[in-house]
Amino acid sequence: FMMLAKSGEPVIVSVNGRVGYDSRGRFEKTHCMLTNITERMRQQEELQLLQQQKSLVLESVSELVIYHDLDMNIVWANDAAARSARMPIEELVKRRCHEVWHKRDEVCENCPVVESLETQSSREAQVHMPDGRVLLIRGDPVWNDDGEIVGTVEVVRNITARVKAERALARRHRDVMV
Figure 1: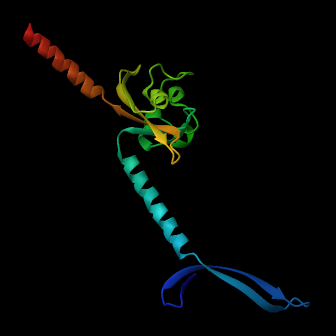
Figure 2: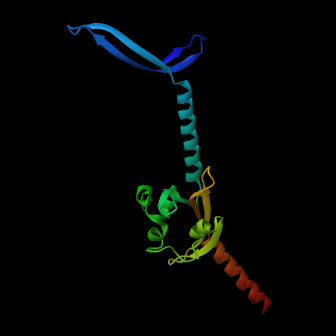
Figure 3: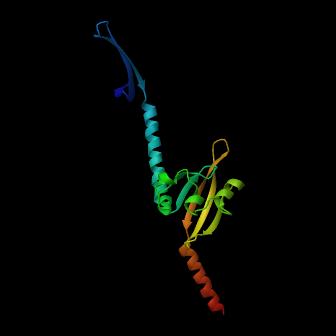
């Protein structure tokens, strides 16, 4: 409910109460407690807005953004990751990236995401996929307020076109030099 406080300021309240009846079951009295929940509602609205903004940003990027726990289980992934895996986000969660994208039972050798956990620092590597794509994969550790690593964020960018252009440029450069 929206009410006016003594000061005249509008407040949001929750109402909790009990109804009392006499021995014949007729209404006798009621006890009500009003609790000012204005601040809680403001905080909930602010949190919802922040979550919407986060989703808007992370869903707008073309890069795959994936959050892993310490066991390399996928906790969260953006739409680009789901499209890349050709499965709904709900199916990605709790799976491991090496199972989804590399069809492997074990983590990939020299995985920058795993290395970011081991070294407690950012790591990056170019990965050549079996289908010919070249991906730039970056892993960044995620720290909690106590200074402990609680997971890692993986950001993947398809750089196939850039790598092909660099190779073509290098070939032309060699041809000119010969």
